[in-house]
Image 1: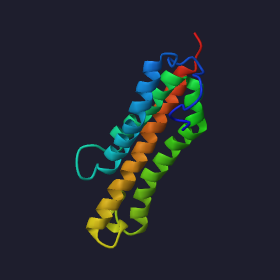
Image 2: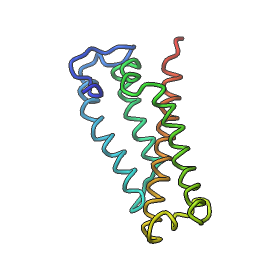
Image 3: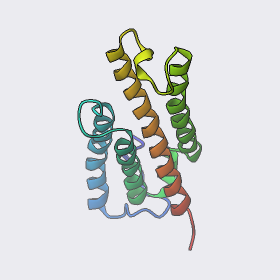
Length: 152
């Protein structure tokens, strides 16, 4: 409900004084977030992946910040959380490679991550793409918060 802005006025200089923008954003945000998750978890079967999903998820929060104000966007995703996403994504990506080493394979050798090479490939791709998604979303939100919070 916080993300959808139920029952509260815009704050932080958003464009949300216009009821058409508010309603439009409330209608577009949930499908955008869902599409971002679809792109993330469908990457091993079709087009998409962590980078695209991270951008889509970050764009949803940026839209929320533009319409309802930067203060409300910072309450939905606080800046320390965005920074933590960057670090967590890099750790997930690197951690998958290290686990491959520890299990006797090469760096980012997915075959050794599970009982069968096919299952290892599937798990490795999902984990690496999840790390990329977290890093990209975190970086994009950090950039947005840095620039949107400036006063002219």
